[in-house]
Image: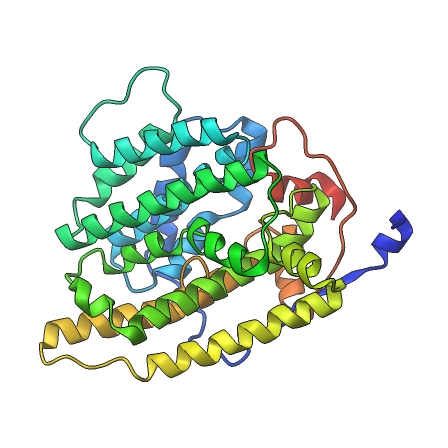
Length: 361
């Protein structure tokens, strides 16, 4: 395909949440928590100044504010810190081979399980970031939510190692296999635990078939949104193996238009599945438990997408992660031109944003 042909191609994003009943809602403590969390992250010098600037443009704290609208100030701060930890891991793991990713994953989990232990000198910085994040979180987290978070984050870290192995071995997955892996690498299950950070919802309640359907459907909606909106910059830098658009296009021999239609139809089915399950979640005789379950499932609807559905969708356009400064415009038009192939610079730690802020969009 020639450069001229590529420049004439437009991507039309489906309005996947046009009938979603949860509106945009932001945590009232956002501005304070955003500044505090951003200042905290910068103390680690995890990125070069250029890469830090690109990273800041992504405004990951906004994702927490949209994803955790009901949490108090302390909870909002934990959510902001978690988003920063997630994306620090994501960006650093993108540069790691299988062995390097395994070492980093073990460091993170050891830090989370031993938050009072001083990290070894010279260790990868992700360990200390994880340790300080969790040390702050456990001040307000119930034992139930602490256990659940550690379990889910362990699964997430293992999946990131698997993702690195796929990249190292140039392994390309089919659609079903990809969904299985991506449901974990997106990090949703670990992230939604923050919504119950002060709660004590029993395991058997969360294992209710309708609540499990809500979690699984919201996870798939979030990963779909992530892959739709990130596809353009990922294909531009030649790193779209772990993206649903490229997977579907290759597996079903479809062009971009047909691929986006297939994904949109699949997402519509998930919306119906989520709303049907939402109406069937049982009520509980214990008033406190019933209130916590109600709050939790509403948080899923607001957050959905790696985080609640509405929150992730809004963040994709309001930050500069995928569309630079044109996000709000593209949110309305739902259209963007296919980016030409580029090579990210050696200092790029946030390559998705770097392609945009470098002037290629």
